[in-house]
Length: 283
Length: 252
Image 1: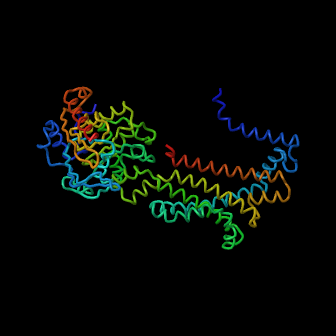
Image 2: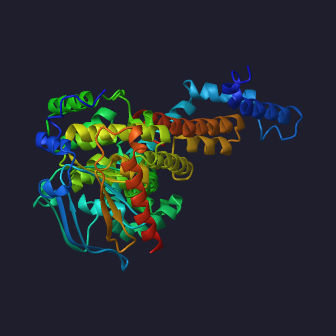
Image 3: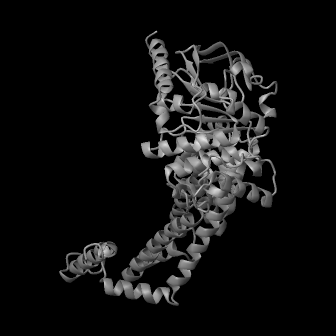
């Protein structure tokens, strides 16, 4: 109902180029453009415990990157540092050479109940980032309506968040993150508070958004199946101080479906990731 | 059938109380001079409230309570937001607030009498003082306990500190602010009624209760007590209804 429609021209700048890069099947990151995010010498300590020590990482542009690793290894801390929500002690994070203040990012929190504003109707929640950018009200309205139409969302947006189901609230959160047409979308375990049925539905929603926009998406997940199923790249982190245990490529064609889950490449990739993960947990 | 009668459950206690009261009067368990019959009491309440002196006293007490609560709110809400917006700032004045919040406001009467003399000014300012501290404390905590994720969400969307304060912290603190207002108005009523009894008052519910007792007019005294009770209950209910209307997300 969504895939195969016109690309969301307003949602992602340069989506055509990115879409074609995607269509090429992502034949390894080497041929793709320069990295979207470059992290150099990142160091972060909590009370003398070193979470990141001189950490380097490149995130490719236009890919969906899953971050997976042992509990407490700093998955969320990593994307929070990239998104500017958490300070770091040393190092540098650049977005194609630009600093954090110069780029627009979208961020979706795990706890949608606390992330949304309960005093605003869903519609106004989605438009709030535009209000911060001083976009006049009629244009806010128009842009929100366009986004809703594009995503084919069937939610009564005149309701308040607490009147919506968990999945609907998280969908509103995602739309609020997308409304500013961010360069990168971060999601911190976005579906882990939802029941299984809703989780499956939301994965498809996220995949649709990715296919349509081709934007860079970074997803922190604690579910390996989800991490592999949705991703082009799976970033496997070690225990702290975090190292890159592996940065696995998974190039299965999109749109992916239930059949993907039983395909050989999926099973192999997941098994490989699990191997690396278990080695890291034991290590 | 059982569910249909559920809304009537609160009536049970009221009926029970009146029956017990009648019983006590009927069987002479309590000296009839000390405890008049419910009939005599409600007659005094009715005639007093409909054009009698009790009605005027009621209005006076409502007025004093309303003015003192309004003064308290106007001072305490902005101050609470200001203090609550920085946890370090609040910690630095927390002891002073807690100390005076714990001080019985009635202990302040002599001081305020010296400052403002005998009259409405003293009553209202002591009540406002007590209510303001309760409101201040609640507003500040409401602001400080704003959901962390909500603040981060605003920050990641690019909200400035001022915008976070106005768009998020302020609204986040509203449910707690209403808790403060409800407690504040209750306290203001208590202080006003006490002040009306003991510091040279010629009207008000406190004065009415005290005078009726002095004149040994028991039905009148009970009537004034019930009027004060109804006022306290009504004020609380009023704030709950206003909160439900304007802070619709509270507790959700």
